[in-house]
Image 1 (cartoon, chains in turn purple, cyan):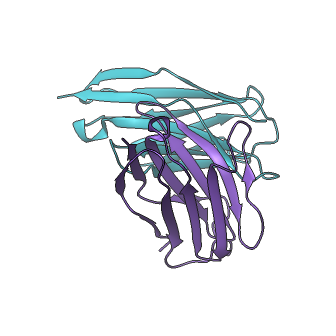
Image 2: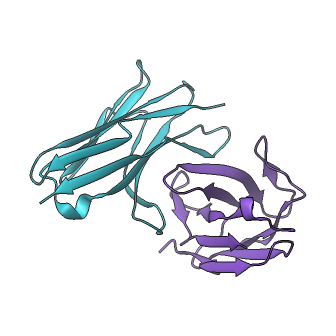
Image 3: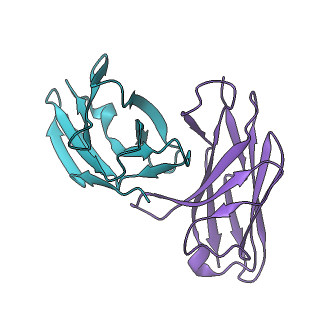
Length: 117
Length: 112
């Protein structure tokens, strides 16, 4: 159990376009999901905390107008990178917590490699 | 906020040797400390975790120790195998915020 699905796994786009990444909890309800960004050979940096039915909480230094997060249901959160530029190229990964059990454990999606040309 | 420091950044061992990775945290309210293994381009996988009411936990070749007073915790891998080669991350979680703060990662290489 506790499977988190993330799509797409990789995307290449032109500079200036927007890209949407989906994160789904397949067999549990997740009131809270987290979005991380990871550059090559670096750690996971938390971008924002996504709460179902409310606005996301962004970490310091993360532009909320550039990284739009929507958590419309208990099983789906989306991250939209708006007007992407080459510096946005990175590995984006979501995670979710099963609210009914194993409250502290985070389950990760498979990640999305974004390349902006 | 929480700050997690992880050392060493790279670790190279011979197959069969032990590997130890250490982390320190800054927030005394943090009470959950997981360790993740991440292979290139893949998702982090939880390999072991420990809560602040426990000092040590073991799962086969992997063990984690926690010193709450000193605010540090360590991952111990015994009888290392080439398949253990990966990047390992420690993390700490404060129950008030519910989010994980990760260490910088350790690249472990196990030579056959």
